[in-house]
Image 1 (spheres, helix red, strand yellow):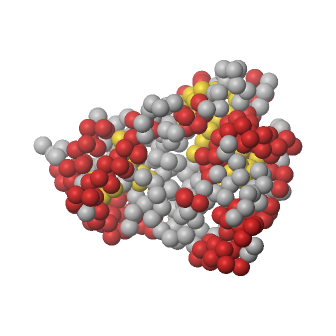
Image 2 (cartoon, one colour):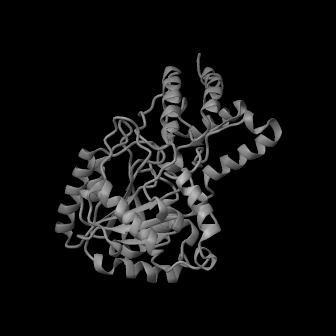
Image 3 (spheres, one colour):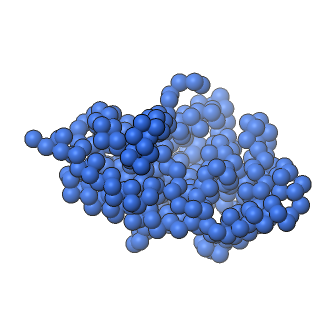
Length: 389
């Protein structure tokens, strides 16, 4: 498929070109979710030690298809400690970041040629359309509840049918920054149990969690897998450790899930078919040294508060984020694309929300230095002034 250009990448490339003209310090690029803080020292130190002191044939060699045992053991130990789960190596498959985890999870639950569907909730990461389509299923998108960005349950229940094999959630959420509450997850789990029984087949819950550790003070952020047996967790260290280029993640299934015994073996066979196998050994071994380490993530909450306070004072409407480094304000005109084009005259690079299932809204990826966030406020003021009559 060569159609469907990513608007995120298009805006990002515009920002790069503009920076060549006016200097990168003068471009307020809020387009791309690229972490702006350094990886934890434990991760960097591990890389140095592994390269200097371990067997180079190990650290630069192929990983087993299921992943390095050291990484898998460290990860399940960390998760069991933090969330009181009972994971073992039988539950986990290492992946090439969260995208690779999703690619395996979708293919594990979908039977190609059966006209099956996977349901997700707007606002949503637009690449899901391609990820799900590649598995042979159709992505069905539940319209957003713009008042809260929690799940629109009434619309959701009406969209489940006999061809629904999974529900995909992303919390903390890209692009809204909203975190699904315990109440939301409990209600979702109850619906999935009831619908699975009614339809006579399991509906899996696939939880995409690359922002799990970026949660702000006072936010209710449940560990989704605790609430529904048939849960598959897809994770990446890209955001928690600020290492998106390391392409390290995992796919994890609950022991109580239907098909649990075969899941990892199925993922191995899927990897053989799609060539999405053998995640980088060195990066897995670095994670294994301290699987629970994170970057200093507090800067994202600082940035969020600065922008939220300023933008709401300027008349922008938004639901206050509970995590991630994204927010989704309502544009000051109905056409968010036109709004984002106007923002360019002040060297503000914003992403219209149409492709996220949020027309009339725009995404801000505030993973930029705090001093630059502060300097961008004048640009937002000038943009807002265009709409005052």
